[in-house]
Amino acid sequence: MLAIDGATSQAPSIAVSAQQVVLTWAATAESRTNIYAARSTDGGRTFTTPVRVNDVEGDARVNGEQAPRVAIGDDVVVGWISKLSGQSRLRIARSTDGGLTFAPATTPHAGDLTGARGWTSLTIDRQKVVHVAWLDGRDAHTPSGAAAGAAKAAHADHGGMRQDIYQLSLRPDGSTTEARVATDVCFCCKTAVTVADEGATYVAWRHIYPTNLRDMAVARSPDGGRTFGAPVRVSEDGWQIDGCPEDGPSLAVSADGVLHIVWPTLIDEPQARKAIFYSFSKDGGRTFVPRIRLDRDDDGSTIAAHPQVAAIDSINGRVYVVWDEGAGASHRVRLRRIASSSRDGWTPVPGDIVTVSGDERAIYPAIAVTPDGAVVAWTAGPSNASEIRVRAIR
Image 1 (tube, rainbow, N blue to C red):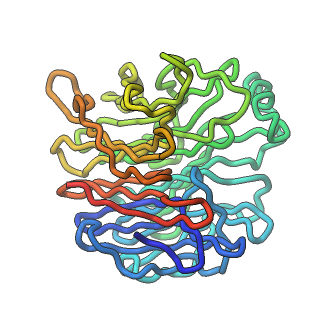
Image 2 (image 1 turned 120 degrees about the horizontal axis):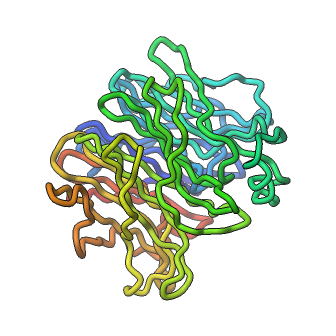
């Protein structure tokens, strides 16, 4: 269990490098939110005393789909959204000692942007470049063609404002490249970003297709985030909703170059509920196999949400997916493994659904894969006294 005295803790994220695990989360007390980090050198079995990441007291804005994000390269990098100054800004803090201390945070984008920013995702590639994707409202009141009308109608609860998705690449020398990946996207669902060993950058989000269909989209950059190709629709799910599901995708690339994606969507069999689906692409995000359902509807659960996927950085056939789901009066975290095979590519292991936690309230899980298993973290306990719980899976 990880918590800060006198504060509610929520929204964990995890990054792994070999046996080093860094866990970040948000802690709120008296309406002020800070970001904390703790480090493990034994694969997530034990953690150091938490340290505060943000140098400006109370400057973080966090919720379940807007968690602080962490990645490990040579350094540990943490990103979050701040609104303390009245402007919505992405903040980045870096640690050069494995997450024991952090330098003052910086804002990598222009500091005078209007509109909202949020729902970030973060990764580091082999060239030590930090890649950050986020939803951005700098052009909220600017129309952008035929899709804008549908998007504005769908965003009526946000004043009809448009939301776009951006990706920024922050290089070791401090230089940046920023690209707008797509316009008129779903307003409140988390984004995902990952980088393949060969250098391609992938960004995923929930897009708005005519008319108000909320499906997953993926775009690929072949040049380190400078430019992105046209969005590819992962699956035609048919979820039509005049609002935001607040539940987005997660991406990972396995060492064989396969791109894995998980996401939630609404189904109506045998009754309307959210379910978790998985797909993969073997051709660099150009096409995706038909979706595969990961959760079950015969075990008392009524809703499944907030999936995260992680893959290990070696070819040994290990990809893990976690999500949370309602089951009676409780809310539990479940895990399923995806395995590779020469015949089918990648498939869920039959019957391999593990209850990681059966806490009364276990929500918003995060996962990272270690050399000998995985580490899962989640928010647990009542909303006014929540804490972060961690389990190493072997």
